[in-house]
Length: 408
Image 1 (cartoon, rainbow, N blue to C red):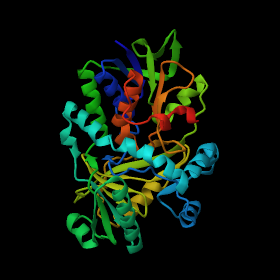
Image 2: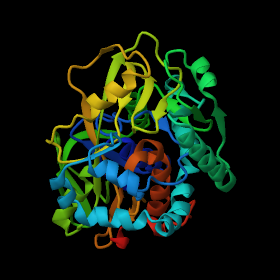
Image 3: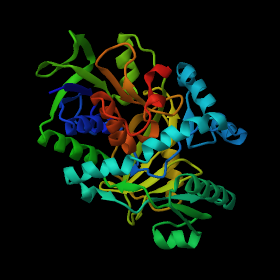
Image 4: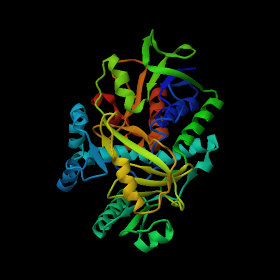
């Protein structure tokens, strides 16, 4: 029976672990924390079936000026982080041109199309249906011009990819969400996405099923990854663990783990924040404020407010959440904060917006599965399937060439 160590117990790591297990492999999932406690815990809890094209870097002069002058709450930055991530950000800028984005979008869409089907497989096996709704989410437009632009873009995506949506007037939005005091200029309701009341709990449910089905979880340190004869090993609490194959699925920590092996993989690291609130009247469905980059999502712990992107070192303070609280509080009564300290984490974004999926170019038995950007929670099981097909020699469900680490 082939064996693999999977380093990283977020949605990407659990996704590939489950997919290999389904194919008869012996798999050990390794992390310093329990499954689902890092980036996969901190997102807005949306399995984004509508996100058929990746998030591009803003290139319009108005948007760039707002970011540069600190007027944008959707994107904030720190100069030191811009310098440190200069190579990755330059690649992100180039690939975000209309031509560059058009080249990567088909490969991205091929993954998104598989997302809900692969999640459903594990939702059923894990008995996690109670965590999931299939009624979509909404994006608020604050001004008529923004509403017109959103509708035009939604119509384009429907024509190109078949994603379903519905336009809502301001009155219709307030009727659907009585908690809102302002319906803006209306909303776009994406109908195909699924929403999750506790993202960390869904990852945990998948990991619990993995263990019930014979998988192993070990508390260990990915920094100890080394070749061991024809295979790989890591140090864990119970001693060294070895396997023929190893998968690096460490999200934003992946490039650092691969540096001792000679790989220099650029990555854009976008920090994000969230906090829960005991709202007197919660929303029914998640709501994105398109103008300011935050999301309000009804969850098990209360209303979760998640922020946009903060390009900064981990220790750099930010007022992004406080500004989001002020903006969101003008839309609905948030209520008392649940946590004294907000959660923060990092989204691992590749310069060309495509995840890294496939073999390490110079090491036999070493495989890579990271860089999902904003969509690790959505894509983990689907990209896990693609990697599992590559590792087992099966025909991949889509051409894997665009995701190869060799492109760096």
